[in-house]
Structures are given as C-alpha cells and as structure tokens.
Image 1 (cartoon, rainbow, N blue to C red):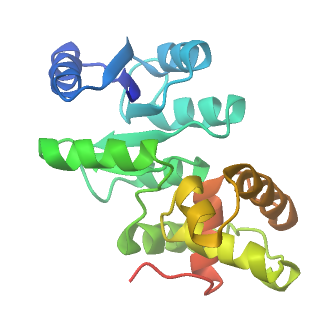
Image 2: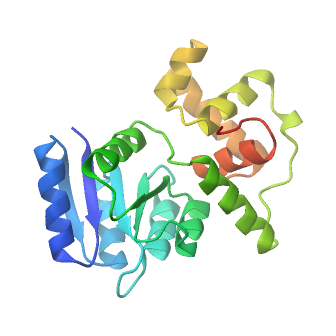
Length: 214
C-alpha cells in the first residue's frame, strides 16, 4: 500500500484527492495546508510519496520541498501546479523533486505518476529536463563539472538507467546485482560527481550525453 502525504491549502481539493487515492487502495497518512505543516508531517511519517502544491501560505511548496529533502534526501515529492511552465516547478525539480503533475490532470495520469514515483522513478520528460538545464544556464548556475570519465563502466550504466527512469529494483534486475549494491553505487556516484539527489543525477546524465529521454 502506497502511503501518501497531501499538501495543499484548499481543503476541498485535498478531500477530492483523498477520496480518489483511497478508492484506489492507497493510504493518505496526512494532510497539510501549508509548507510548515508539510515539513513536520514528512519528518514524522516518512511517506512513500508527497503531493506538494506550489503556492501556499506561510511557506510555499518549493521551500518546503527543499527543507524536506535536506532532512531526507530520499523523499519522493511530486509538485502540483496549475501551469506547465511554472518557474517554481523548475526550482523544485532542481532541489530534488521527482517531477510535477498538473492540477487538471485526469485520475489515470495522477495515479500513474504516484505509482511510478513510489517505485523510484522520476517524472522527468524531455521538455522538463531541457527546461531545467536551460534554467541552470540562464542563471549561470552549473551542475558539478566533474567529468563522467571518473565513473567506471558499471557506475556509468547505473547512472544511465537512473536517468531513464528506472527504479533501484529495476536497475538491480537489469544488471543482475542486489538493490543494496545499487544503493551503495548510487551513493558513490553522488559523492564522485558532487550531486545531492536522483533528480540532479538524471539531469547530469542528460547534460553529459550519458542518457537521453527521447
């Protein structure tokens, strides 16, 4: 059963999401009306997936996501937004959110997104990845410049599969290794490349030509 934390300042919207998710066998372990509540709930309950609205009072979704990921780098956050080109989405993804879902998405799209992220995937389509990379460039920010030549063949393959959206379990099956080995290798990759999370690793792999999302 996938455990979900709902974060949105509109009670009716949260209630609608709760009804939908619970009807599909998921468990809503908490609801937060602002970013501060979200941080507290996430730290206390460690949900499998956090559905995070962007615009909220007291503390917005981007800052809340940043704080949650500082506490738990493995937290799986999906941003909820009204607009595909919302600049705040880029900031959240750069901070480590697994992707975004539009508020007017249909139920099947939302459920698929939650299942994929719960399974370890990132919702990074080609347009989103390119937009985030462009955003880094426009602000003259850079992902670490360490060359991927420092990675060995197995590490490069793990990074490629991660960038293509495979979960740790899928990577382990494809490479005939244990999930623990995948986790350990990813930790080593992050350290070598000075990356903080899976989203940054995926963006790095795309930028360096290790993987593509076509």
